[in-house]
Amino acid sequence: MAVRLTTPSPAIGRLAGPRAEVWLVRHPEVHADWRARAYGSLDVPLSEHGLAQAREIGAAYARLAPRAVIASPLVRARTLAECIASGAGVALELDAALRELDRGRWQGRERAELEREAPAEVAAYHDDPWNYRAHGGETDADIAARAQPVLERAVAGEPDRAAVVLVTHYNVIRVLCALALGLEPARSFALRVDPCRGILLARGSHGWSLARSNVLAP
Image (cartoon, rainbow, N blue to C red; front, top):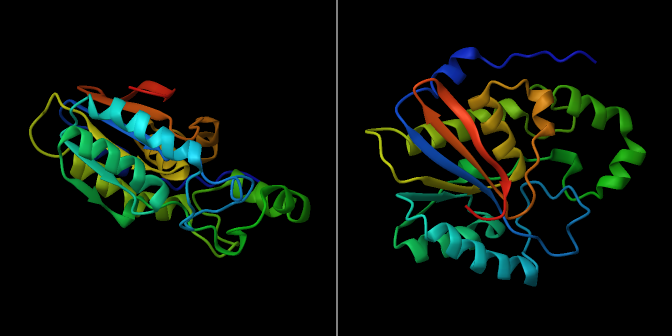
C-alpha cells in the first residue's frame, strides 16, 4: 500500500524557533504480564525492575536541572516523571495529551496473535500510520493533534539554557520526532526508543535536529 502522506508542512514549520532542548523519555519497563501485549493507552503497572529504573534514571535527569517536567498521567510514565521532578525541585505537570496511542480493538491483545490473525491489517497500519483507523483506535494524526501543542508550549517564550523533559510513550515520541525532523510517518518506525530511554531534540537557527537517540541517561 502506498503511503498517503497528509502531514501538513506548516505543522513542522511551527516547531521552528529560538534555541531549545527537549528530552523525550519513554517510561520504564512494564510488568511481565504486559510486555508481549499491545497495551496502548491502558494504565498498566511497572515491573520491579521498572520501579528501580524510575528511581535511578529519574535521579540522572534531575541532575540536568530541567526547567519543566511534563508527563503522561499513565502510571508507568508518571512514576518516572515524579522521580525527575522531585529530584530537580520543580513542579510536575501531568497532561493527558501525552498518553499513549489508543489501539482500539487491538488494545490488550498479544502482538504475536495480532500478527498471526490479522497480518494484512497490521501491515496496513505500518504502511500508513498517519491515516489508519480501521482498528477503531487513534492515528498518528490524532497523536500529533494532541501532543504537538504540548511540545510547542513547553519551548515557547524566551530562549533558555535549561532543558525541558517530557515523559511519555513510544508512539508519542515517534510522532513528535517525525514532525520535528520532517520524517514521513511510515519511516518513523525506524526510530528506536526502548523502555526508559531518551531522545534529545535540539532546536537551533535552522530548526530541530536529533542530538541524542535511545540513550539510557542524559
